[in-house]
Image 1: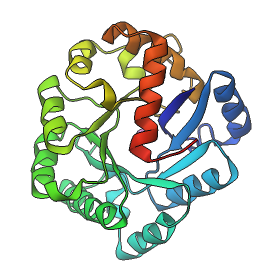
Image 2: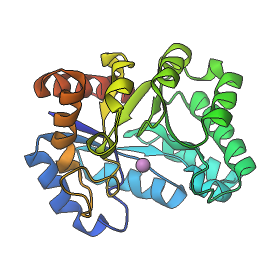
Image 3: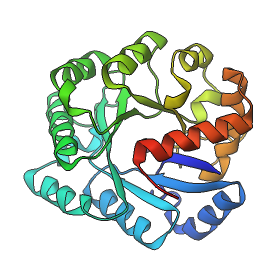
Length: 256
Ligand code: NI
């Protein structure tokens, strides 16, 4: 069984095809899907999805793009939702300076609040970091005592050196998706990461792997990403399936 450790099934681009997408995932051997959130409405949608779908679990939180929507009231709602049985993490949280859809000082303040929140709730954090590693690392350094429940860098785009830094500082997990099939030099990054810290993800409906570029991404494409990961690491696809599933279950503390 494969696990899609980061999906957005509630995204309006694919939400209406939920039945078909979950069945196709199962047929492709993807038995668990972790649905990540981007703001309060999508956190509510993720929890509702997890409640009606046995194979779906929810990660709740406010994405850096939506940081400007964060408030005390949103935080109270996140705390309430976190008590639901199938909520397994806080995310995706972080910094995104590529689009700058929220002001940078707001992104930084909200990231720090959500790190503190996750620690208080005893949940692991799922990070989204894009073109903002310097400021991100500063916040990490200030909060080193707050990651005992686990930290994952989703769609990891940093260098091999940075990966070593996050391994040392956070004992971090790293997830990889469609980018593996179209970006260069990912083999160097993958080799820098311990095998017991690597996960597979789609980030669907975005980041569609080759040869389906231009289509909406779905969890059923996880085996394509696994094949590429196998090629880049020198492991077999069976080994990649086994190790990434064990890692995802361990990180999200999910029992199947
Ligand atoms: Ni995402």
